[in-house]
Amino acid sequence: MPGSKTNELTRAQVLAAVRAVPQGAGYVWDGVDEDDRPLNTEELEAGMAAAVNKRGRPAGSGTKEQVAIRFDRDVLGAFRASGPGWQTRMNDALRDWLRTHSTLT
Image 1 (tube, rainbow, N blue to C red):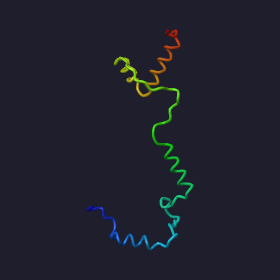
Image 2: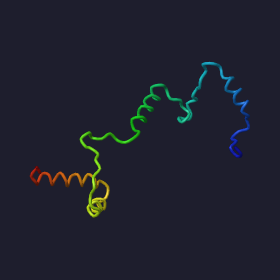
Image 3: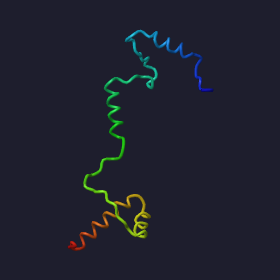
Image 4: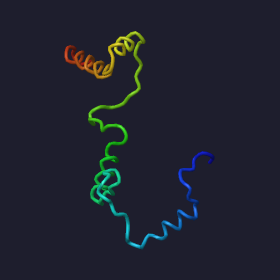
């Protein structure tokens, strides 16, 4: 790609330099720049496990069920206009109604 060159080494020179590192020598941290410090195996595994556990949707409570239901636009509009958490408030309103009314048969 034009303009992406960041050094004067050719691909062959880079490969030769990588192959010139003695087997098992690995990387030695000079102790100066913390960003250059390699992670040990335990740190790497802990970091990966933490990242995996934080991905995706949060775990649900297990007590709710997703259903498709239709409400009048004005009812939905009023709850949505109350801001974030409107679904929880709607659930609470329905729960309150159930407490104050007898069970339908």
